[in-house]
Figure 1 (cartoon, helix red, strand yellow):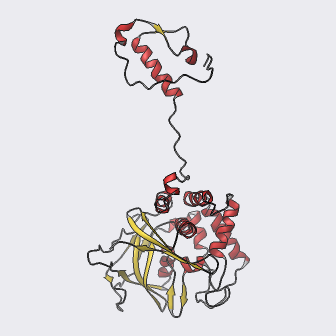
Figure 2: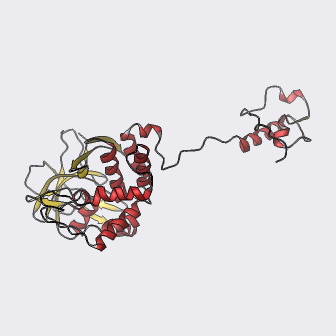
Figure 3: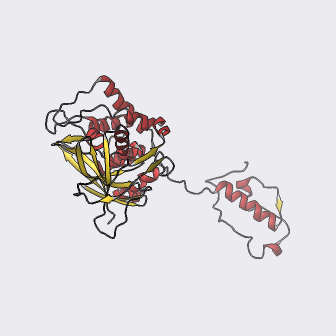
Length: 345
């Protein structure tokens, strides 16, 4: 493009139609922006000039750039609930009920009822191809790395340590975790470099601490794998672990838990937030809420964000589901537990 811009191109107002009277003003004129657009010798009739100026406008007046998909907005930085809701939209690896898996919810019950209201497994089918996805595969490799009972010290082998880091490396390639890093770093709750943030995540989730005995637990073990303490199941909120243990014959689904109010809706096969009762081998968990079909990175992202940026309770909308994310600390800012609570009445 020839011509001198000087201090920059002249401002051009967007025109949706020719200016009034243009059809009778003259037969041919030069472009009023000829120095900017380089058409100093060309002549235009009214309609030609109008079309020429429209083309110039489209080529040179750009709309403001859209925010990056992983960038928190100002509104989200000011509202943790909105940031949590954004994670749901960023979970590109979330499964679709009825396509990637099928639930058989069967009958509901009160948490104190002793009888089993479900003769069949909760997971009627799961497309095992999902475990070829990098984050799912890396997550699966972690599930057999822990002692079931609290009070038994854990020993982390070199292979298990490599598996922990492999999982962190995989999830840090995903939109949900990149978003959480940017969110936390902007509030000085996480280091600016991804490498340092991975180290923070390792300490937060995989560093061993004491529940009943030295180094007998960790945040990851409790929340995702589950533990048995005083003959009761604690933690174990991850749907993949529920599915794996049910498939192995170690878990007995006993029915979904009625909402607190009778007016509440019951469970169905499309639910992605479920409150259920189950027995893990011979130990019972009377009430447990899990997010069904979400990716492993989504749960790590959600719980990390709420634990570091929130309080004990963080209410948010995850898709169509109103939930409260509970966070409890143990020791010096370690994850004791974190899990969702359905707020459906």
